[in-house]
Length: 303
Length: 268
Image (tube, rainbow over all chains, first blue to last red):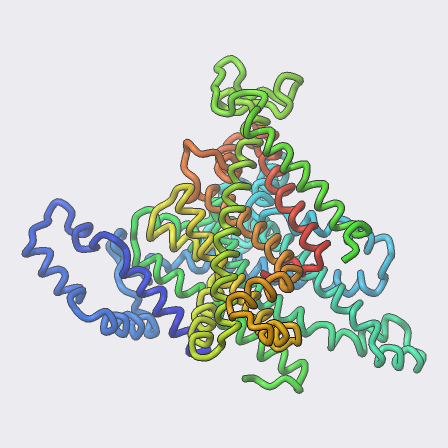
């Protein structure tokens, strides 16, 4: 994991060194003189070796000093402060929704395989997986926001002013992100359980007088859940990335909007920082998935 | 593969076939000029002359959706073509030769796939700017690692099989074995991934154009239309609905095809 993290941060850092254009020219604007540019370059440490600068940036990043934004005249950390909370809350809520919807649903469908609910799901599942989250967001804005007036589109509230109102507003974007993912996880869990049902140990469990439900609950689930855990952990990364787009639909002041604005302004320290943070979340979630799978199935050893 | 009795495959083939037919027709003929504005026909609800209504400039939405779907389709196809071709070469060579090159390339692959693809695409756009061709290249490059990984794993598995040894005994060279003998055998594994890759490309292009960092104004795009349509949700909901439906149908068709071919959706 450590190697991957280092490699990712190095890639992100180097990518932003390749950009055509010089931050010094942009910062100085009309005050540009070659002497001033040189002085500023010296001050910002741009004259030093790339690897030295990478090391400085990385050690700063780890200790919480993420450099200064070109545009906002404050540190990257200050720029990101309130925004990270929004994205984190949105992603986490969407992720919990995925779990809360798909785990019970997947188990129920497998329990009554071929039943009415199961047939409806199999028929509709592909459609749910095909809906882009941001379009679902637009649909929600229309149906719940404009027609049913359950929330005011674009009227996000700050968590400091009204915590429950903030969560309530997030519920719709979170659901928009969660539904397509939940459809995938449900399908995976359902087919994972059904795959196990043909195994010898299931026949043995049946022959001891277990019902289908107690076979699933007591024997199958533990085996069937393993691939699902890995997948669910990986969806968090997609969800964080998806929230970048969905934040835009609901005009949420999160990292996604900041990222887009910073791309537009060529504010690279901010872009770089957001990118590395999201990548770290991905790697960490993968690691966490490994730990959880190992806990469920002690035969698996961490490599 | 018994494709004829496969419901998913049939449904996917029908949807994709219909979409393709509409797109192909749209390249030579649309009911109206997609960009022709008409001051007297603004925001018309769906009716006989404009089956999907008109937008805020009086442009025919059906014609625009058809043109946008065509553009999105071509971008996605070009993207997948780039990713697939480079993935075949890189995955083939690393899977065949192994060794330290394989080790380095796969490490690099791991690092790249750790980023969600939309995020990476945004970074590339931040570095090189937006526009149709830049989107194609950015997304194409992003899809290389996932294809390379699949090809590499398959090549590494196939190369110890008997038919490869036989081909070698007949004096076939490395590249000949790799691309004439092994490649046809990994196509069944590759096809579902191609369909999934296509869907990811449609989704990524639509999202980025929606965010305003993708395809730029003179070029049509479903994502950009959704962005416009969102402003008129209350007065012209059919605008957003028909545009969104086109995206869903594109993704649904290929999703069903991939399912029918035995792929796991969402695994790429």
